[in-house]
Length: 483
Image 1 (cartoon, rainbow, N blue to C red):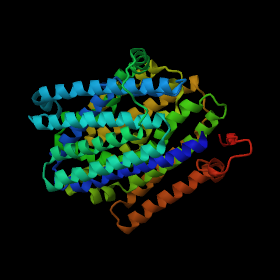
Image 2 (cartoon, one colour):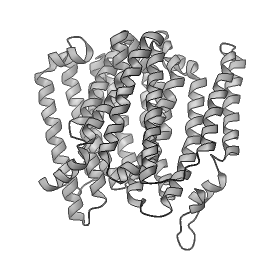
Image 3 (tube, one colour):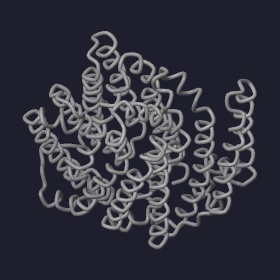
Image 4 (cartoon, rainbow, N blue to C red):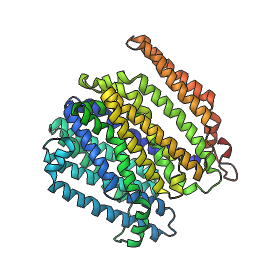
């Protein structure tokens, strides 16, 4: 599993790099055409789309993931995949009809003003995105990282090209962003279906649908809780501050989301591999070793983004958005921590989706409370701090419960020291803020010192990497000593 996880992470990571890079590189284009209010509306529509994608198809893709790998024959797998496909087509199509009929009240609810044309475009975008994600996930469950990477990159390139065409050339504003994204996702959907030829058929099995939904239905309230967790900060900023402040916060969030390049590569590769290999005795030790490696790269990314936040925002955005730099040091680790549940797979392995839902609901409630308390005091920094605290608490609880059901021999002391070192080095750079060259040298020095200390702590082990990527032993054994 270790070799597969690292190799697949590189392939999935290539797609993630293109996607996240595109998200960041579009910022200087859109911020020069859209004002903070328009950018805020785009973020609110994105939040609404997130809620629909998490709930409308009852998370059937997650049920498919759990049952697809355990299916005994190709025909069984085709039945599961086809059933999930046609169920999703029906669910998303029903939503599009509702979105078109209720476009006027929906626009007032979502963006706080009458823009039915935006909700019409959002409905099509959500349909294309939801179906594309289903196809993406099917490539993961079939363990086809190369197909996943190629199709994801092509979809991203298409989304970028058409979005720039509609926003910059046609001057369609927010409508142009939604239209461009829809075309790109539709392109990816068509390519994905071509890649998966033979996976789907004209078949629908009610019994298998019930099996998948029995696993995934508890994840629906969990999905709503995830939505609240992900977007309550922006919704609360809109409530307590202004839509323009949502746009400023959104710029900071997009810069902070660069850290997810580390997370998404591990996350996308690891989940299907854990489902395949969790019964093997060496898997827990390999998972622990991967977590330490991930922690080292994650902390370096967080430190780099935190110390260079001002410079990055000034490069990618215009002066009205510069306040977004203040939230980057808090949101960068929050983004990473929110995805680290993949290193605590016990509840998913044991099919305890009810416990997962309970954890997510508890995190959502905590985030709401923290946002309500902190935003009136700290502004958008309060929203970012609430997100960080909520993500940390949820990961801690998830890890404790996971360890009770599927023990992984994590080494917490070096990881804890690494976190403390990262925070300390960031604080040491703050007195140099605004000092030009001295500031840049201090920031670069902090990153170099952190990397050296992580080697010293054993978070990054060259011999571990050599074992992981080197040739297999004669018996094909996996390196169990790395844990």
